[in-house]
Image (tube, rainbow, N blue to C red; front, side, top):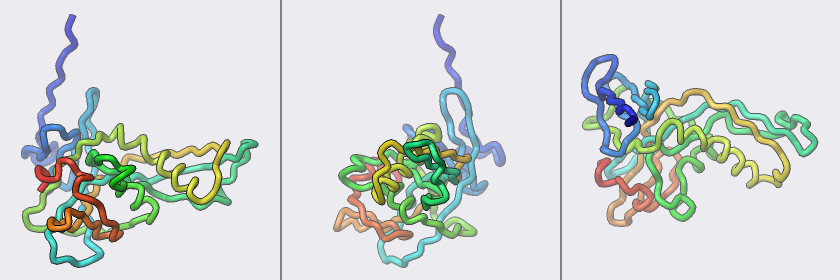
Amino acid sequence: MTNPIRVIPLDCATCQKPLVGLPNDTAFTCVPCESVLSVNAHSTVQIPLRIAEPSETTDAPIIYLPMYRFALQSSVLDTQGTDITAETPLPEHAWVCGFQEFRPAYFGNPGVDMTAAQCTPLALEAPPPQFRLLGIARSLEEAARYPQLFISLLLDRRRDITGQTIEVDTATPALWAIPFALHEAENTLVNLLTAHRYATRMVETLAEMR
């Protein structure tokens, strides 16, 4: 017996207009309704869409990249099982790339950088002209695995955490469109919230997302 194929209409549940995405995307946007439909093999989840206001000005073209923002409830236990959360400053939220970044250990990871900076952008009241958000290839399920890894990584940068237990609970995130300045002559992207610079090769689907 063959497995049944589940076909999902990619229409907005609110306005019934077609959702927007690339062929390999797992989440699809409806900009007028400020919502994102995340799709997996078993279910669909609708999450809010926010467009971040740039904190820096630029003359370069701006491209918006998708980033999940998770609110966190974290705790840390020492090697004896004692709760030392109160002694350990922990991030209140984590950022995870909604796009599939290429070789993040080499080209950098905007999710780690924005989590470390505890970036809290302001949301635009209306989308910019010709705005669209594509390339959300990382599923919500996959993205939810990263906050605990990022928190462990950031804590380990401060001190040795060998033997400690780090627990991280996440709420359903929002998906943010984060503005990056595209400097084509230098093949770089600059995060207009944190000023971090990345090689354009970090985003393999950059041409399709523009």
